[in-house]
Amino acid sequence: MFSTKWLRDSSPFTGVGVLAAGLVWAPCLRTQQPVARRVPTTVGERLAADLTWTQAQRDRRFAHMNRLFPTHTVRHAGPERPLPAGPALPGMTGTLDAYMQSEHLAGVLVLQDGRIRAERYALGATQETRWTTFSVTKSMTDTLAGAALQTGALRSLDDGVTHYLPEMKGSGYDGVTVRQLMTMTSGVRWREDYTTPDADNFRLYTTPTPPGQNSTVAYMRHLTREAAPGTRWQYNTGETDLLGVLLRRATGLSLSDQLSATVWRTAGMQADATWIANAPGPAGVEFGGSGLSATVRDLGRYGLWVLEGGHGVVPAGWLAEATRAKVEAGGAGYGYGWWPQPDGSFAALGIFGQSVFVDPARRLVVVSVGDWPEATGRTHAADRAAFWRAVQAAAQP
Image 1 (cartoon, rainbow, N blue to C red):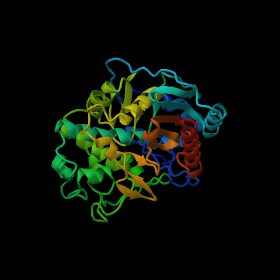
Image 2 (cartoon, one colour):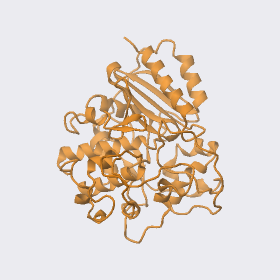
Image 3 (cartoon, rainbow, N blue to C red):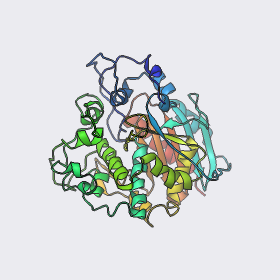
């Protein structure tokens, strides 16, 4: 059960802020101006208000999102995968400490060949802390599409969205495929902007939902098309949320139960995870684009699971395909919830410094969680990329 008492010391609601993850290449946030003064009340409004928290509030709350919002549990089972200690990365102690301090991080983990080569915690976090991952979650929701293909619950990524969500017929998503939803190339008009309450990624969570309707479907079905499907990429958190609804419809299972049965029970996780839903209890539906909280070590195990091909949960070659660039995305590439890097590595990314970086060539997984002073920013992104390069250099055979 979630509690609102953690919100009582929140700063006044300014109408700015989203649950969605920002792009690593996005510009810094502009100065935020108050546009409203009422306290958010619905789950969606409270989610949309999270960027209005002070840094001190985020430091406390990012480790306890299940106390703020309704959540479902992603249960672990079976033997825990050991993460034995390996040799410390040479020359990295000062670099790691400086990186964590300058970027205000709560945890960093470096695994190579399944062994811990570096691990640090701050901001009160420990090995047991479940930290919010924001849009790192997108990579997991897209992975669940691969798992649904493996079981036959999803017939093909080239099926139309309306095959699984007939209520989207006549909308901008009529004629859009599941694959285009996953690559954010629907052609539907969408504005993702972290500085204004008029942006779609804000309105998605704050627009009132008619009784009996899913909040994501209710908002997304009224969007209009401005480009042919498959011809243009536009970062769109709502589309991964919609994918989550589609997967729930196709499988008959909550996203949490899907993730538990696939990744969490085959990767040797040490702890349950939690996933924010739009309402308490079994009727609540998780937000596919964000909201998962997990321990740093379990995020590392997730990276190892991906590195090792998914342990038969997804079709052969799925993860190699998912982590390659499918579309040109604002000067970078985008796969199925993953951001491929030029050297063959790839990363799942979330606002405020959340990331799971995987380098197959060096058998590396690097996890970072934290609380950047801003949700996104070029300097933060550049510092993170520089840290990845330093780890890669130190981890050379």
